[in-house]
Amino acid sequence: MPPAPAITDLEKLRNHPAVARLVGWNAAAVTGVKFDREEMTIYVDRDHIREACVVLKQDLACPFNFLSDVTCVDWHPAEPRFEVIYHLLSIPEKERVRLKVRLNSASPVVESLTSVWPGANYFEREVFDLFGVRFTGHPYLRRLLMPEDWEGHPLRKDYPVEGYR
Amino acid sequence: MILNMGPQHPSTHGVLRVLLEIDGETVVRMMPDIGFLHTGIEKTCEAKFYQQVVPLTDRIDYLCPMTNNLCYVLAVEKLLGLEIPPKAQWLRVLLNELTRINSHLVWLGTHAMDIGALTVFLYCFREREEILKIFEMASGQRMMTSYFRVGGIALEPPLGFFDRVREFAGSFPSKVDEYENLLTGNPIWAMRTKGVARMTAEDAIALGASGPTLRGSGVDLDLRRDMPYSSYEKFQFKVPVSGEGDVFARYLCRVQELRESTAIVRQALDGMPEGPIKADAPGVVLPDREKMKTQMEALIYHFKIITEGFAVPAGEVYQAVESPRGEMGYYIVSDGTAKPYRVHMRAACLANLQTLPKMCEGRLLADVVAAIGSIDIVLGEIDR
Image 1 (cartoon, each protein chain N blue to C red):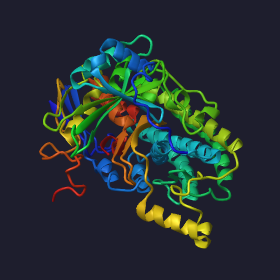
Image 2: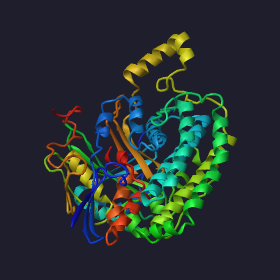
Image 3: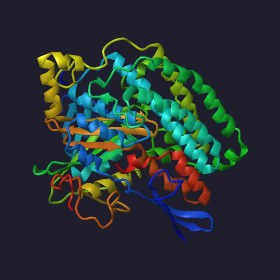
Image 4: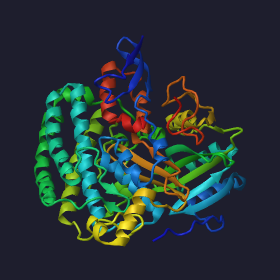
Protein backbone atom coordinates (compact mmCIF):
# COMPACT_ATOMS: atom_id res chain seq x y z
CA MET A 1 0.00 0.00 0.00
CA PRO A 2 1.32 3.49 -0.72
CA PRO A 3 2.83 5.32 2.23
CA ALA A 4 0.77 7.88 4.17
CA PRO A 5 1.23 11.52 3.04
CA ALA A 6 3.86 13.55 4.84
CA ILE A 7 2.86 15.86 7.70
CA THR A 8 4.60 19.22 7.60
CA ASP A 9 2.51 21.25 10.03
CA LEU A 10 4.51 22.33 13.05
CA GLU A 11 1.44 22.44 15.26
CA LYS A 12 0.66 18.77 14.70
CA LEU A 13 4.23 17.65 15.37
CA ARG A 14 4.93 19.73 18.44
CA ASN A 15 4.78 16.70 20.75
CA HIS A 16 7.75 14.88 19.30
CA PRO A 17 10.57 15.10 21.92
CA ALA A 18 13.10 16.67 19.56
CA VAL A 19 10.68 19.19 18.11
CA ALA A 20 9.37 20.16 21.54
CA ARG A 21 12.88 20.69 22.89
CA LEU A 22 14.12 22.74 19.93
CA VAL A 23 11.03 24.89 19.68
CA GLY A 24 11.14 25.46 23.42
CA TRP A 25 14.79 26.55 23.20
CA ASN A 26 14.64 28.80 20.13
CA ALA A 27 11.62 28.69 17.88
CA ALA A 28 13.32 30.87 15.25
CA ALA A 29 16.00 28.24 14.62
CA VAL A 30 13.46 25.66 13.44
CA THR A 31 12.57 26.61 9.86
CA GLY A 32 10.42 23.57 9.10
CA VAL A 33 9.42 20.08 10.13
CA LYS A 34 8.34 16.98 8.25
CA PHE A 35 7.04 13.64 9.46
CA ASP A 36 7.15 11.16 6.60
CA ARG A 37 7.25 7.34 6.57
CA GLU A 38 7.48 7.39 10.37
CA GLU A 39 10.66 9.49 10.35
CA MET A 40 10.99 12.94 11.86
CA THR A 41 12.91 15.59 9.92
CA ILE A 42 13.62 19.04 11.38
CA TYR A 43 14.99 21.86 9.22
CA VAL A 44 17.36 23.95 11.32
CA ASP A 45 18.81 27.33 10.51
CA ARG A 46 22.50 27.25 9.56
CA ASP A 47 23.73 29.55 12.31
CA HIS A 48 22.10 27.56 15.10
CA ILE A 49 22.87 23.98 14.15
CA ARG A 50 25.70 23.41 16.61
CA GLU A 51 23.77 24.81 19.54
CA ALA A 52 20.67 22.89 18.49
CA CYS A 53 22.68 19.68 18.61
CA VAL A 54 24.03 20.56 22.07
CA VAL A 55 20.47 21.20 23.25
CA LEU A 56 19.27 17.86 21.90
CA LYS A 57 22.28 16.03 23.31
CA GLN A 58 21.76 17.41 26.79
CA ASP A 59 17.98 17.00 26.92
CA LEU A 60 17.05 15.12 30.07
CA ALA A 61 13.89 13.44 28.80
CA CYS A 62 15.24 12.13 25.51
CA PRO A 63 18.99 12.73 25.13
CA PHE A 64 20.09 12.37 21.51
CA ASN A 65 23.58 11.34 22.50
CA PHE A 66 24.67 9.39 19.40
CA LEU A 67 25.51 10.95 16.05
CA SER A 68 24.73 8.29 13.48
CA ASP A 69 25.65 10.06 10.29
CA VAL A 70 26.50 13.34 8.58
CA THR A 71 25.86 13.51 4.88
CA CYS A 72 24.80 15.87 2.12
CA VAL A 73 22.48 16.04 -0.87
CA ASP A 74 23.11 18.25 -3.89
CA TRP A 75 19.94 19.73 -5.41
CA HIS A 76 21.69 21.48 -8.32
CA PRO A 77 20.42 23.53 -10.12
CA ALA A 78 17.77 24.30 -7.48
CA GLU A 79 18.65 26.79 -4.73
CA PRO A 80 19.43 26.32 -1.84
CA ARG A 81 21.78 23.86 -3.44
CA PHE A 82 23.13 21.76 -0.60
CA GLU A 83 21.32 20.09 2.25
CA VAL A 84 23.59 18.84 5.02
CA ILE A 85 21.84 16.08 6.91
CA TYR A 86 22.54 14.92 10.45
CA HIS A 87 21.06 11.71 11.80
CA LEU A 88 20.84 11.55 15.58
CA LEU A 89 19.93 8.59 17.76
CA SER A 90 18.92 8.57 21.38
CA ILE A 91 20.39 5.40 22.87
CA PRO A 92 18.29 5.39 26.08
CA GLU A 93 14.98 6.18 24.35
CA LYS A 94 15.63 4.46 21.01
CA GLU A 95 14.43 7.48 19.03
CA ARG A 96 15.86 8.81 15.81
CA VAL A 97 15.66 12.30 14.37
CA ARG A 98 17.03 13.88 11.22
CA LEU A 99 18.26 17.47 11.21
CA LYS A 100 18.75 19.29 7.94
CA VAL A 101 20.60 22.50 7.15
CA ARG A 102 20.09 24.17 3.78
CA LEU A 103 23.09 25.90 2.21
CA ASN A 104 23.35 28.09 -0.88
CA SER A 105 25.89 27.39 -3.55
CA ALA A 106 27.32 30.88 -2.98
CA SER A 107 28.50 30.03 0.53
CA PRO A 108 28.38 26.33 1.39
CA VAL A 109 29.78 26.76 4.87
CA VAL A 110 28.43 25.42 8.14
CA GLU A 111 29.80 25.04 11.63
CA SER A 112 31.48 21.77 12.46
CA LEU A 113 30.03 19.42 15.07
CA THR A 114 33.37 17.95 16.13
CA SER A 115 33.23 19.94 19.35
CA VAL A 116 29.94 18.23 20.22
CA TRP A 117 30.73 14.74 18.93
CA PRO A 118 34.35 13.90 17.97
CA GLY A 119 32.83 11.18 15.80
CA ALA A 120 31.67 13.81 13.29
CA ASN A 121 35.29 14.17 12.14
CA TYR A 122 35.46 11.65 9.30
CA PHE A 123 31.87 12.22 8.20
CA GLU A 124 32.48 15.96 7.74
CA ARG A 125 35.74 15.34 5.95
CA GLU A 126 33.90 13.08 3.55
CA VAL A 127 31.21 15.69 2.88
CA PHE A 128 33.93 18.28 2.26
CA ASP A 129 35.78 15.91 -0.06
CA LEU A 130 32.82 14.82 -2.15
CA PHE A 131 30.61 17.96 -2.07
CA GLY A 132 32.83 20.90 -1.24
CA VAL A 133 30.91 21.99 1.85
CA ARG A 134 33.29 23.58 4.34
CA PHE A 135 32.98 23.03 8.07
CA THR A 136 34.36 25.85 10.21
CA GLY A 137 36.15 24.75 13.34
CA HIS A 138 37.01 21.30 12.02
CA PRO A 139 40.46 20.24 13.32
CA TYR A 140 41.68 18.67 10.07
CA LEU A 141 39.48 19.49 7.07
CA ARG A 142 41.29 17.64 4.30
CA ARG A 143 40.18 15.21 1.63
CA LEU A 144 39.39 11.79 3.01
CA LEU A 145 38.55 9.42 0.15
CA MET A 146 39.90 11.13 -2.97
CA PRO A 147 43.66 11.72 -3.43
CA GLU A 148 44.93 14.97 -1.87
CA ASP A 149 45.62 16.60 -5.22
CA TRP A 150 42.20 15.85 -6.75
CA GLU A 151 40.32 18.75 -8.26
CA GLY A 152 36.58 18.90 -8.13
CA HIS A 153 33.97 17.38 -5.87
CA PRO A 154 32.76 14.10 -7.33
CA LEU A 155 29.32 13.69 -5.75
CA ARG A 156 28.05 17.05 -7.00
CA LYS A 157 25.39 16.71 -9.66
CA ASP A 158 27.43 18.63 -12.25
CA TYR A 159 30.29 16.12 -11.97
CA PRO A 160 29.86 13.29 -14.52
CA VAL A 161 29.39 9.70 -13.37
CA GLU A 162 32.20 8.51 -15.60
CA GLY A 163 34.54 11.17 -14.24
CA TYR A 164 37.04 13.22 -16.21
CA ARG A 165 39.78 11.56 -18.20
CA MET B 1 60.14 8.43 14.06
CA ILE B 2 57.28 8.40 11.61
CA LEU B 3 56.46 4.90 10.46
CA ASN B 4 54.12 4.07 7.63
CA MET B 5 51.96 0.98 8.07
CA GLY B 6 50.23 -0.11 4.88
CA PRO B 7 48.35 0.23 2.61
CA GLN B 8 49.80 -3.15 1.71
CA HIS B 9 50.15 -4.91 5.03
CA PRO B 10 48.99 -8.33 6.16
CA SER B 11 47.49 -7.04 9.38
CA THR B 12 45.53 -4.03 8.27
CA HIS B 13 42.69 -6.18 6.91
CA GLY B 14 42.45 -4.37 3.65
CA VAL B 15 44.03 -1.31 2.11
CA LEU B 16 44.31 0.77 5.23
CA ARG B 17 47.29 3.05 5.68
CA VAL B 18 48.18 4.09 9.20
CA LEU B 19 50.76 6.78 9.88
CA LEU B 20 52.40 6.12 13.21
CA GLU B 21 54.63 8.51 15.07
CA ILE B 22 56.57 6.26 17.42
CA ASP B 23 59.06 6.88 20.17
CA GLY B 24 60.88 3.59 20.61
CA GLU B 25 58.08 1.05 20.77
CA THR B 26 55.44 3.47 22.02
CA VAL B 27 52.94 5.01 19.66
CA VAL B 28 52.81 8.75 20.25
CA ARG B 29 50.36 9.69 17.53
CA MET B 30 48.43 7.75 14.98
CA MET B 31 46.51 8.78 11.89
CA PRO B 32 44.63 6.41 9.60
CA ASP B 33 44.65 7.30 5.91
CA ILE B 34 41.89 5.78 3.81
CA GLY B 35 40.51 6.07 0.30
CA PHE B 36 42.50 3.38 -1.50
CA LEU B 37 39.40 1.31 -2.18
CA HIS B 38 37.10 4.21 -3.09
CA THR B 39 35.14 3.22 -6.17
CA GLY B 40 32.39 5.83 -6.12
CA ILE B 41 29.55 3.42 -5.39
CA GLU B 42 27.34 6.22 -4.09
CA LYS B 43 27.72 8.08 -7.38
CA THR B 44 27.15 4.92 -9.43
CA CYS B 45 23.90 4.22 -7.60
CA GLU B 46 22.47 7.49 -8.89
CA ALA B 47 22.84 6.23 -12.46
CA LYS B 48 21.12 2.87 -11.94
CA PHE B 49 17.58 1.67 -11.42
CA TYR B 50 16.59 0.66 -7.90
CA GLN B 51 16.78 -3.07 -8.65
CA GLN B 52 20.15 -2.64 -10.35
CA VAL B 53 21.65 -1.19 -7.19
CA VAL B 54 21.28 -4.50 -5.29
CA PRO B 55 24.45 -6.14 -6.71
CA LEU B 56 26.39 -2.95 -5.94
CA THR B 57 25.42 -3.16 -2.29
CA ASP B 58 26.97 -6.64 -1.93
CA ARG B 59 30.38 -5.25 -2.64
CA ILE B 60 30.37 -2.52 -0.04
CA ASP B 61 30.87 -4.60 3.08
CA TYR B 62 31.99 -7.69 1.25
CA LEU B 63 32.19 -9.92 4.31
CA CYS B 64 28.48 -9.60 5.07
CA PRO B 65 26.91 -9.17 1.63
CA MET B 66 23.41 -10.23 2.60
CA THR B 67 23.30 -7.67 5.39
CA ASN B 68 24.01 -4.90 2.89
CA ASN B 69 21.31 -6.31 0.60
CA LEU B 70 18.88 -6.44 3.48
CA CYS B 71 19.49 -2.85 4.57
CA TYR B 72 19.08 -1.51 1.05
CA VAL B 73 15.91 -3.42 0.18
CA LEU B 74 14.37 -2.56 3.55
CA ALA B 75 15.01 1.13 2.83
CA VAL B 76 13.45 0.94 -0.65
CA GLU B 77 10.50 -1.04 0.71
CA LYS B 78 10.02 1.66 3.33
CA LEU B 79 9.98 4.29 0.57
CA LEU B 80 7.46 2.27 -1.40
CA GLY B 81 5.34 1.23 1.58
CA LEU B 82 5.53 -2.48 0.64
CA GLU B 83 4.40 -5.26 2.96
CA ILE B 84 6.75 -8.22 2.87
CA PRO B 85 5.27 -11.72 3.38
CA PRO B 86 6.35 -13.49 6.62
CA LYS B 87 8.21 -16.30 4.90
CA ALA B 88 10.43 -13.82 3.08
CA GLN B 89 11.09 -11.99 6.33
CA TRP B 90 12.05 -15.18 8.19
CA LEU B 91 14.28 -16.31 5.34
CA ARG B 92 15.96 -12.92 5.42
CA VAL B 93 16.60 -13.30 9.16
CA LEU B 94 17.97 -16.82 8.67
CA LEU B 95 20.35 -15.77 5.93
CA ASN B 96 21.30 -12.58 7.75
CA GLU B 97 22.36 -14.57 10.80
CA LEU B 98 24.30 -17.06 8.68
CA THR B 99 26.04 -14.04 7.18
CA ARG B 100 26.83 -12.76 10.66
CA ILE B 101 28.41 -16.12 11.55
CA ASN B 102 30.32 -15.98 8.26
CA SER B 103 31.66 -12.53 8.96
CA HIS B 104 32.63 -13.28 12.56
CA LEU B 105 34.49 -16.41 11.41
CA VAL B 106 36.62 -14.29 9.09
CA TRP B 107 37.16 -11.79 11.87
CA LEU B 108 38.17 -14.47 14.38
CA GLY B 109 40.46 -16.25 11.95
CA THR B 110 42.30 -13.13 10.79
CA HIS B 111 42.41 -11.47 14.20
CA ALA B 112 43.89 -14.58 15.81
CA MET B 113 46.30 -14.97 12.91
CA ASP B 114 47.56 -11.41 13.33
CA ILE B 115 48.22 -12.03 16.99
CA GLY B 116 49.93 -15.31 16.18
CA ALA B 117 47.40 -18.10 16.66
CA LEU B 118 47.54 -19.55 13.15
CA THR B 119 45.51 -22.71 13.82
CA VAL B 120 42.32 -20.76 14.52
CA PHE B 121 42.47 -19.30 11.02
CA LEU B 122 42.30 -22.73 9.41
CA TYR B 123 39.54 -23.91 11.75
CA CYS B 124 37.38 -20.85 11.06
CA PHE B 125 37.72 -21.10 7.32
CA ARG B 126 36.79 -24.78 7.45
CA GLU B 127 33.40 -23.79 8.93
CA ARG B 128 33.09 -20.87 6.58
CA GLU B 129 33.40 -23.25 3.65
CA GLU B 130 30.17 -24.98 4.72
CA ILE B 131 28.30 -21.66 4.95
CA LEU B 132 29.58 -20.57 1.55
CA LYS B 133 28.31 -23.84 0.10
CA ILE B 134 24.90 -23.12 1.67
CA PHE B 135 24.87 -19.66 0.07
CA GLU B 136 25.83 -21.15 -3.26
CA MET B 137 22.97 -23.60 -2.97
CA ALA B 138 20.46 -20.80 -2.43
CA SER B 139 21.66 -18.04 -4.71
CA GLY B 140 24.26 -19.50 -7.02
CA GLN B 141 27.01 -17.32 -5.60
CA ARG B 142 29.34 -17.97 -2.67
CA MET B 143 29.96 -14.42 -1.59
CA MET B 144 28.28 -11.66 -3.58
CA THR B 145 24.88 -13.29 -3.36
CA SER B 146 22.48 -10.41 -4.27
CA TYR B 147 19.80 -12.81 -3.11
CA PHE B 148 17.32 -10.28 -1.74
CA ARG B 149 15.11 -8.21 -3.98
CA VAL B 150 12.89 -5.21 -3.39
CA GLY B 151 9.74 -7.03 -2.31
CA GLY B 152 11.19 -10.30 -1.02
CA ILE B 153 13.68 -12.95 -2.00
CA ALA B 154 14.86 -13.63 -5.56
CA LEU B 155 14.23 -17.39 -5.70
CA GLU B 156 12.67 -20.11 -3.58
CA PRO B 157 15.43 -21.95 -1.68
CA PRO B 158 16.08 -25.36 -3.30
CA LEU B 159 15.13 -28.78 -1.87
CA GLY B 160 17.56 -29.86 0.79
CA PHE B 161 18.47 -26.29 1.74
CA PHE B 162 16.81 -26.32 5.14
CA ASP B 163 18.23 -29.75 5.98
CA ARG B 164 21.70 -28.54 5.19
CA VAL B 165 21.28 -25.43 7.32
CA ARG B 166 19.91 -27.55 10.18
CA GLU B 167 22.92 -29.85 9.94
CA PHE B 168 25.24 -26.86 10.08
CA ALA B 169 23.42 -25.30 13.02
CA GLY B 170 23.63 -28.62 14.85
CA SER B 171 27.35 -29.07 14.42
CA PHE B 172 28.49 -25.46 14.79
CA PRO B 173 28.29 -24.87 18.58
CA SER B 174 30.87 -27.61 19.19
CA LYS B 175 33.19 -25.82 16.76
CA VAL B 176 32.81 -22.59 18.69
CA ASP B 177 33.81 -24.60 21.76
CA GLU B 178 36.96 -25.62 19.88
CA TYR B 179 37.86 -21.99 19.17
CA GLU B 180 37.23 -20.97 22.76
CA ASN B 181 39.32 -23.91 23.93
CA LEU B 182 42.23 -22.58 21.94
CA LEU B 183 41.90 -18.92 22.85
CA THR B 184 39.76 -17.87 25.77
CA GLY B 185 41.71 -19.59 28.53
CA ASN B 186 45.02 -19.25 26.78
CA PRO B 187 47.55 -17.19 28.83
CA ILE B 188 49.32 -15.92 25.70
CA TRP B 189 46.02 -14.70 24.26
CA ALA B 190 45.19 -13.07 27.59
CA MET B 191 48.51 -11.24 27.69
CA ARG B 192 48.05 -9.93 24.16
CA THR B 193 44.43 -8.89 24.54
CA LYS B 194 43.49 -8.20 28.17
CA GLY B 195 43.86 -4.56 29.10
CA VAL B 196 44.93 -3.69 25.55
CA ALA B 197 43.35 -0.82 23.62
CA ARG B 198 40.87 0.15 26.27
CA MET B 199 38.03 2.47 25.41
CA THR B 200 35.46 3.89 27.79
CA ALA B 201 31.75 3.92 27.08
CA GLU B 202 31.62 7.74 26.88
CA ASP B 203 34.39 7.83 24.29
CA ALA B 204 32.77 5.08 22.28
CA ILE B 205 29.43 6.90 22.12
CA ALA B 206 31.08 10.26 21.38
CA LEU B 207 33.09 8.77 18.52
CA GLY B 208 30.07 7.06 16.97
CA ALA B 209 31.21 3.49 17.50
CA SER B 210 28.57 0.80 17.26
CA GLY B 211 28.21 -2.96 17.28
CA PRO B 212 30.63 -5.12 19.27
CA THR B 213 33.06 -2.17 19.43
CA LEU B 214 30.44 -0.33 21.48
CA ARG B 215 29.10 -3.35 23.35
CA GLY B 216 32.61 -4.33 24.38
CA SER B 217 32.73 -1.05 26.32
CA GLY B 218 29.53 -1.81 28.16
CA VAL B 219 26.86 0.07 26.18
CA ASP B 220 23.87 -2.18 25.59
CA LEU B 221 22.63 -1.26 22.13
CA ASP B 222 21.66 -3.80 19.47
CA LEU B 223 19.40 -2.62 16.67
CA ARG B 224 17.97 -6.10 16.16
CA ARG B 225 16.48 -6.05 19.64
CA ASP B 226 15.99 -2.32 20.26
CA MET B 227 14.69 -1.11 16.89
CA PRO B 228 13.66 -4.38 15.23
CA TYR B 229 13.22 -4.85 11.51
CA SER B 230 12.22 -7.75 9.26
CA SER B 231 10.41 -9.63 12.09
CA TYR B 232 13.43 -9.79 14.42
CA GLU B 233 11.01 -9.06 17.27
CA LYS B 234 9.77 -12.64 17.00
CA PHE B 235 13.13 -14.16 17.88
CA GLN B 236 14.63 -14.75 21.32
CA PHE B 237 18.30 -14.01 21.66
CA LYS B 238 20.68 -12.51 24.16
CA VAL B 239 22.90 -9.57 23.33
CA PRO B 240 26.40 -10.06 24.77
CA VAL B 241 27.80 -6.97 26.47
CA SER B 242 31.11 -6.76 28.26
CA GLY B 243 32.19 -3.85 30.39
CA GLU B 244 35.97 -4.01 30.17
CA GLY B 245 36.39 -2.12 26.90
CA ASP B 246 39.57 -3.90 25.85
CA VAL B 247 40.36 -6.23 22.94
CA PHE B 248 39.46 -9.28 25.03
CA ALA B 249 36.01 -7.88 25.81
CA ARG B 250 35.26 -7.31 22.12
CA TYR B 251 36.53 -10.81 21.37
CA LEU B 252 34.18 -12.30 23.97
CA CYS B 253 31.23 -10.30 22.58
CA ARG B 254 31.75 -11.58 19.06
CA VAL B 255 32.36 -15.20 20.05
CA GLN B 256 29.18 -15.15 22.11
CA GLU B 257 27.38 -13.64 19.12
CA LEU B 258 28.42 -16.72 17.13
CA ARG B 259 26.44 -18.87 19.56
CA GLU B 260 23.47 -16.50 19.66
CA SER B 261 23.29 -16.36 15.87
CA THR B 262 23.22 -20.16 15.74
CA ALA B 263 20.29 -20.10 18.16
CA ILE B 264 18.44 -17.61 15.94
CA VAL B 265 19.11 -19.80 12.88
CA ARG B 266 17.60 -22.78 14.70
CA GLN B 267 14.56 -20.74 15.73
CA ALA B 268 14.10 -19.58 12.15
CA LEU B 269 14.26 -23.15 10.90
CA ASP B 270 11.76 -24.40 13.45
CA GLY B 271 9.23 -21.64 12.94
CA MET B 272 9.57 -20.96 9.20
CA PRO B 273 6.11 -19.89 7.96
CA GLU B 274 4.57 -21.00 4.68
CA GLY B 275 3.65 -18.63 1.92
CA PRO B 276 4.99 -16.58 -0.95
CA ILE B 277 8.51 -15.24 -0.98
CA LYS B 278 7.71 -12.03 -2.80
CA ALA B 279 5.30 -9.24 -2.04
CA ASP B 280 2.15 -8.80 -4.08
CA ALA B 281 3.15 -5.73 -6.08
CA PRO B 282 3.10 -6.44 -9.82
CA GLY B 283 4.72 -3.18 -10.85
CA VAL B 284 7.69 -3.61 -8.52
CA VAL B 285 8.31 -7.33 -8.05
CA LEU B 286 9.23 -9.49 -11.04
CA PRO B 287 6.60 -12.16 -11.87
CA ASP B 288 7.37 -15.90 -11.75
CA ARG B 289 9.12 -17.16 -14.86
CA GLU B 290 6.31 -19.61 -15.63
CA LYS B 291 3.72 -16.86 -15.50
CA MET B 292 5.96 -14.63 -17.58
CA LYS B 293 6.20 -17.28 -20.29
CA THR B 294 2.46 -17.89 -20.51
CA GLN B 295 0.59 -14.71 -19.52
CA MET B 296 0.71 -11.45 -21.46
CA GLU B 297 0.31 -9.13 -18.48
CA ALA B 298 3.15 -10.81 -16.61
CA LEU B 299 5.37 -10.47 -19.68
CA ILE B 300 4.56 -6.78 -20.00
CA TYR B 301 5.27 -6.17 -16.30
CA HIS B 302 8.55 -8.07 -16.58
CA PHE B 303 9.57 -6.04 -19.62
CA LYS B 304 8.68 -2.72 -18.04
CA ILE B 305 10.41 -3.44 -14.75
CA ILE B 306 13.60 -4.56 -16.44
CA THR B 307 13.82 -1.82 -19.04
CA GLU B 308 12.27 1.14 -17.23
CA GLY B 309 12.51 0.27 -13.56
CA PHE B 310 9.77 1.13 -11.10
CA ALA B 311 9.08 4.66 -9.93
CA VAL B 312 9.39 5.21 -6.20
CA PRO B 313 7.35 8.01 -4.57
CA ALA B 314 9.44 11.06 -3.67
CA GLY B 315 10.82 11.25 -0.17
CA GLU B 316 13.74 10.12 1.91
CA VAL B 317 14.34 7.34 4.34
CA TYR B 318 17.11 6.21 6.68
CA GLN B 319 17.11 2.51 7.43
CA ALA B 320 19.63 1.07 9.85
CA VAL B 321 20.39 -2.58 10.56
CA GLU B 322 22.74 -4.31 12.94
CA SER B 323 25.56 -5.56 10.76
CA PRO B 324 28.34 -7.68 12.26
CA ARG B 325 30.31 -4.46 12.62
CA GLY B 326 27.68 -2.16 13.99
CA GLU B 327 25.03 0.22 12.74
CA MET B 328 24.94 0.03 8.98
CA GLY B 329 22.51 2.53 7.52
CA TYR B 330 21.23 3.43 4.09
CA TYR B 331 19.94 6.95 3.49
CA ILE B 332 18.01 7.01 0.21
CA VAL B 333 16.51 10.14 -1.32
CA SER B 334 13.99 9.58 -4.07
CA ASP B 335 12.75 12.23 -6.47
CA GLY B 336 9.86 10.19 -7.86
CA THR B 337 11.73 8.56 -10.76
CA ALA B 338 13.04 5.03 -11.24
CA LYS B 339 16.59 5.98 -10.31
CA PRO B 340 17.52 7.01 -6.77
CA TYR B 341 18.50 10.66 -6.42
CA ARG B 342 21.01 9.98 -3.67
CA VAL B 343 22.07 6.82 -1.88
CA HIS B 344 24.32 7.21 1.11
CA MET B 345 25.71 4.29 3.06
CA ARG B 346 26.44 4.87 6.69
CA ALA B 347 29.42 2.61 7.13
CA ALA B 348 29.75 1.17 10.61
CA CYS B 349 33.48 0.78 10.14
CA LEU B 350 34.08 4.43 9.25
CA ALA B 351 32.87 5.50 12.66
CA ASN B 352 34.58 2.58 14.37
CA LEU B 353 37.86 3.53 12.69
CA GLN B 354 37.78 6.87 14.47
CA THR B 355 38.20 5.04 17.76
CA LEU B 356 41.56 3.66 16.69
CA PRO B 357 43.76 6.68 17.53
CA LYS B 358 42.07 6.97 20.92
CA MET B 359 42.74 3.32 21.66
CA CYS B 360 46.33 3.13 20.48
CA GLU B 361 48.02 6.36 21.43
CA GLY B 362 50.35 5.78 24.33
CA ARG B 363 50.47 2.03 23.79
CA LEU B 364 53.03 -0.30 22.25
CA LEU B 365 53.38 -0.84 18.52
CA ALA B 366 52.34 -4.49 18.72
CA ASP B 367 49.05 -3.46 20.33
CA VAL B 368 48.12 -1.53 17.19
CA VAL B 369 47.76 -4.82 15.34
CA ALA B 370 45.55 -6.26 18.07
CA ALA B 371 43.43 -3.09 18.11
CA ILE B 372 42.91 -3.00 14.35
CA GLY B 373 41.78 -6.63 14.48
CA SER B 374 39.46 -6.00 17.38
CA ILE B 375 37.44 -3.25 15.69
CA ASP B 376 36.90 -5.57 12.71
CA ILE B 377 37.18 -3.13 9.82
CA VAL B 378 36.33 -3.84 6.21
CA LEU B 379 37.80 -1.26 3.87
CA GLY B 380 35.11 -1.77 1.25
CA GLU B 381 32.63 -0.28 3.67
CA ILE B 382 34.91 2.54 4.81
CA ASP B 383 35.89 3.67 1.34
CA ARG B 384 32.86 2.66 -0.74
